[in-house]
Amino acid sequence: MTYTVLDGEPRCVSRPNAATAARGTGAPVLDIVIPVYNERAALANSVRRLHRYLSESMPFSAQITIADNASVDDTPRIATQLADELPGVRVVRLEEKGRGRALHQVWTQSDATVLVYMDVDLSTDLAALAPLVAPLISGHSDLAIGTRLARGARVVRGPKREIISRCYNLILKSTLSAKFSDAQCGFKAIRADVAAQLLPYVEDTGWFFDTELLVLAERSGLRIHEVPVDWVDDPDSRVDIVATAAADLRGIGRLLRGFAGGAIPVNTIAAQLGNTRAEPRSSLLRQVVRFAAVGVTSTAAYILLFMVMQGWAGAQLANLIALLMTAIGNTAANRRFTFGIGGRRRLARHHVEGLVVFAVALAITSGALGLLHVSAESPHHLVELAVLVAANLLATVVRFVLLRGWVFHPRRTTTEGRI
Image 1: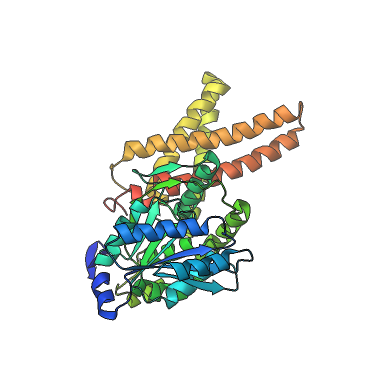
Image 2: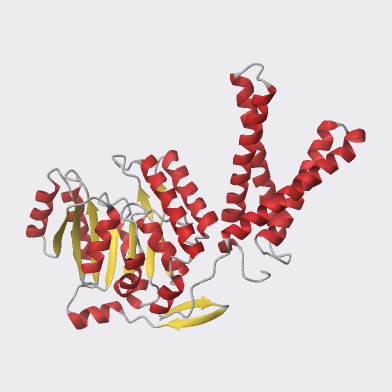
């Protein structure tokens, strides 16, 4: 059984045991898909290692599907040899590239009851596979993801990828109110009956496929199980970070437009999956408008306080006091009116974190001005003004993202005290 909380009440959604269902049809319980493109160097060793692990450690029947994304090197030949050599290994050839396209096709055509995918480099420790699929097999959860960003995960990777990953997930939380912690870890699973309902609504055929699937599932009231993983970065990864990031941002924009305009029918999806209504989300547009209104009010209050105190406190002290007072007032106003959090629960923590966010924004504006004076000894005042305007716009966006995706994110607050 899967329990979904809607309108504050737990509602039961029946999910049959996947292992029992598989025995009834003779199909494998698990279908583990490995999407590959020109992976002749890593493919054979990884598939043999995975096959050995499944044979020795997995109590459920499983098959391995190598999804070849139109490789032009020796990958197809190696994949075919592996399928001939190892029982339970098969190859599906696609003539177009795209990880999302490969997963969509293979998952749609698979007869297994639980569908899994993992990256060919096996960066994730295979010991996490059983904890990943167990709640799906039992019917407790609908999807499961490996997470590198939750407590208990052990991750070995460079600072660049760490920062990019955390920033991406922060953007998801601040724009789409995502509650899951790691969208892009290449270690996920979904029940086949749930996939059959969700996949027709997933448009992306590339790297954003994972994120879109998870957001749709969450908005439809499905339960997503997270497993902290041991993960070691592949130094030979050939992912184009810039192109992938741009595609992800376009995907986020498309989802925001779809949810706002009703083009993505989450209530219909929820009903098909047995839920009476999709999980509600705060309106991003409404929050942006309220955040802007609070910002304008805070600026007016700052100017008034500075003018009142400047005569007796001096410019520097008056500026400091006015900034601190308006920062505290800004956090309180956003807490109450922008993000709808009432009561005193976690009030002190919110104000401390609000000051941290304020310090980050201040560092952006001060840093921009400092860099300008380093690069130009005596910049024209119009140039200074332009730099400060641009820096303040960036600082405002950063403040909103941090407040929405960190300080007041739904996962870090409770429904108690919300208005």
